[in-house]
Length: 94
Length: 135
Image (cartoon, rainbow over all chains, first blue to last red; front, side, top):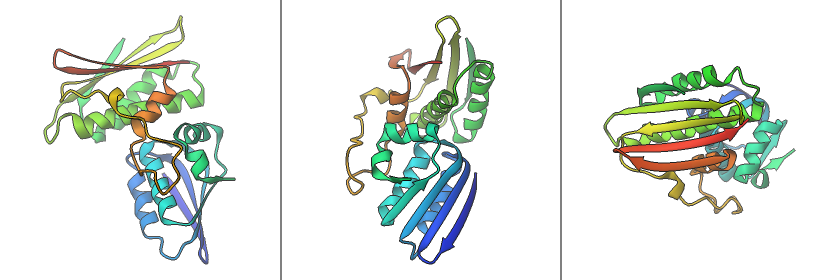
């Protein structure tokens, strides 16, 4: 998985590319845990091809720790996983 | 029916995933179906790796059976670890707000929701978990 982060003051966008699974989720979790001062976080999922519960877990950790968490460019297959798990109602999906 | 038997450790997830693809890549599955099957492999195989044998080690066998007539993929997970029926695990409440939701516990639920059928039995000291997905 490739993680691209762009920061602008207290805003940050994290673009995920590839697979967010049990082997790659720890890397994202480490990044999310170190986000001091970020109050507005956006995950750009345009190039995310796969997500498992290990990946959803990290998104949930981010949402619990940061006030504004948005999801952009989600594809319909990942959106289906968000719908199944109720993540569609928890996250601000744009 | 094709079968692969590996040591139940998470490093073997890619091997099992590769085995799945060898069986299903020639089929006309949608991208969503392939992802849901991969999720099932990851969630159920990792459960065996992390919990079936406690601190010890053991094997996991994964069988893939494809019924082309009825367009159905059947995957069976077999381990000889402690008896565990994942279907008895209570479903998470996905209507809870963010404050009340636990951060984990979604794996089995995702598989249950995305497969067409899921059955468990314990026989001859084996956990036998079977999932079916139409394609």
